[in-house]
Amino acid sequence: MANNSDASGMENLAVFLTVFNEKSFRTAAIQLGLSPSTVSEKVSALERSLGARLFTRTTRSVRATEAGQALAERIAPLLTEVRAALNDVTTLQQDLRGTLKLNVTGAVMVDILPPLLDRFLSQHAQIRVELMVDDRLVDATLAGCDAGIRYGEHLAKDAIAVPIGPRIQRLALAASPAYLASRDRITHPTDLPEHNCIRLKFSSGALVPWDFSRNGQMLRVDPPGRLIIGVDGASAAIDFARNGNGIIATFENWLQPHFDAGDLLPVLPEWWSSFEGPWLYFSSRFMTAPLRAFVDFLREQEA
Image (cartoon, rainbow, N blue to C red; front, side, top):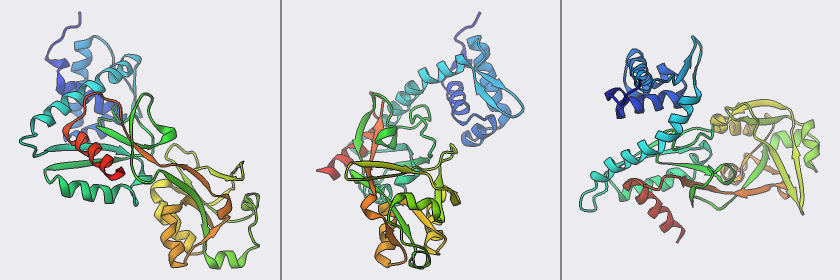
């Protein structure tokens, strides 16, 4: 019969959750600074203690069983609260200490989050920040983070959300003056499939959609990409557009410096669609001291 031995203690649960998030014993071992055999032993000990198999292992993959999935969903917020309590113990006489761990989409790493963190860290010299940059839209709590940064349509259910950065952003199209001079004039989004287009792709395999709107009319165009680049390489994709390789669609705020410099020109600006800016979200009722300080900081920026 299963029993609550030391094998089901905090350390083994934390190791299990890391394997669950990474879907790999080897990757989890690297992240934890342990050997793969140690990670495997700790998960096996936990399975023996619980009397249940938590992962289905093959030579090529690690997949959580139904029991493993249920355990991860239950313990992730509990481990977050324990880490929060330990971090809060380090808070002495208003001298905030500890680590703020955020799971963020790469879209905020260009010009939204870095200046905010610069100011936040200058105010709290004893706080450390760890960023997990991931476009897979994983659950921040399950990933072992204090909070996540997402765009509105990707917020977790029942999440507490605080706005961060511009409230409205736009999907803008751009091409180099040389490219536009060499091709027929673009007058409508339906002209785009006839052009060289530079498409961005999520790690899931889905292409970033090209959505347009004008006077209440909504339109989605899916031109074949002459160049297809992962979203983590967005800066390189913009450089390809600057060098005359075609039309790119991405955040207007990323393209604005190039519009100002003249090395890119707006394409179909009257059709650019708007969307809600990013949010910091967290689902745990127990906030770490660093997270609480960051939320307060963001609300001061909005005031």
